[in-house]
View 1 (tube, rainbow, N blue to C red):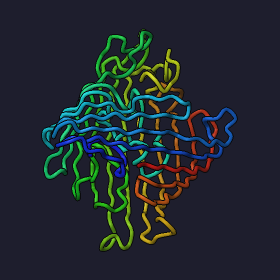
View 2 (tube, rainbow, N blue to C red):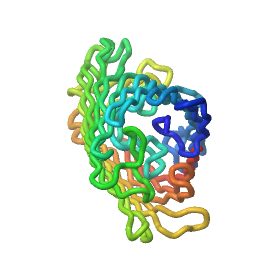
View 3 (cartoon, rainbow, N blue to C red):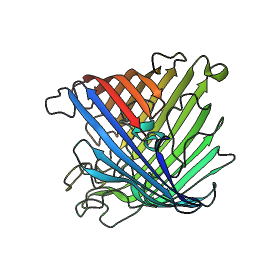
Length: 369
């Protein structure tokens, strides 16, 4: 696969010996009742995003990736733009815009989660969809069971009124070990379910650091964060005749050096752009479980799932005590072609700090080719 992450059914054009070009697309759409993003908290239907995947192999170990994304506000942006030098499985170098070392959810991306909605507790910063501009080294060792990625990136809060106007870089890295089968995912990327393609027991440890990475130009602090995450997925019975069980968990610590960060998108046209603001100090965790039923229902199979998340804010920094935000999800995926064609039916109970609890139902669809 020449692209770090794309649909397995993408079109590949042969350009000669050891050269090719690959093109694919991905789209997600949803309908949600009581959408908290709407002004009246009403129902909302939307195409959540549209992605165009492009990759090329120019020589045996020289590759490139250009993925574009269009979100619901109509803006297009570069999702991934990577020049890839991949001479060995154990050592590879990437330059450009990419996912830094971070938690499993961020390395999944929205298309490879076990459920539809991205976790609220996964709050590593990024220029766009968790990406950042910089350089990464990564590799796979010990028969692909050990994976690592480390790099240096442009970082957070590069803004005249924000903390990193002095242009301090962000350092990020991740280590992961697979105790059972190696994860069948490209490069250092992950997924939160493989629908029985392998037996997985993976533990990952990630961390990030940036001097003057949070706060304003007048009151700045160092940004530090780390997390540990795990995925257990087991085929039950021979050839998964009794289904596939999935269990995922993650624990996070975010530090802002005792200061509050500026607002998301501070002095930017939109909060989506610029990798500015919005980092919170606190502790968070995530736990989810799912079961892929072995029997087909029409064209696909059902995968019921439950997920709980909590973000507990640092004491005294955001109000009295430890304010916290919780979210509970319960629903099911209807799997027709793995992550390439899937429908999700989900009940969401969202309890943000300082606001009333909201309850919503979501129907989501994703398609990749």
